Length: 112
Length: 114
Image (cartoon, rainbow over all chains, first blue to last red; front, side, top):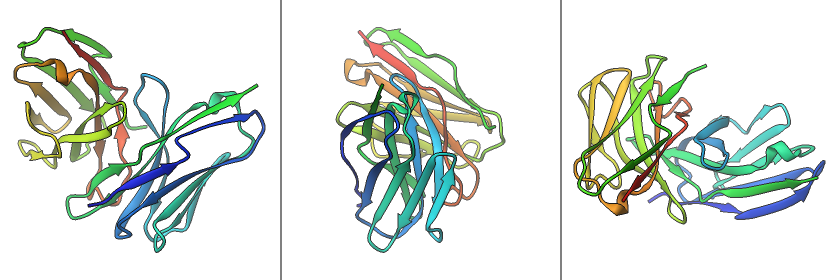
């Protein structure tokens, strides 16, 4: 059974700092990996999608990498801003049913 | 942009009531999903559907049923609401095949059963 873990569970950084969020998964036979952002009480907003054949994806200040063989992905946020404060979730698709398995999330706070 | 719309942001229902949660997507996606999200338990898959009138059980289907009469609409039904079904419910959709495309989520419905 696929298990997805995110470290750290919570993170507080001052504005302007670069940061890395980590995601690990136990079954490397994934089809793709998706990073989401969730604001308190809201739904999930997709940030980046990485196919299993890709090594990384970039969108603005965000860069996600994927090392499928070691079961790891990182989300790099450059020059963090208070508006980046949210919970970040990674999710992988494995298996013939192509269901998403979510990580436990990292709650990020960017302070002024 | 694809939009997944959940009809209610907040709902309060009484124990024993039959509850309908509605989800509509506007981009002709074949696949639709219902999740619930609880603190400490993360997101868990309740039901999903690959096509009209088709449904598959997820990881926690007990106490729920679904309906997909039209491609764009996927309804979650709580046959007899109980307090342990108080949760945030999230609907999602994706193109076919689902293992190649990203998921789009709705804004969620916070359901409280009293």
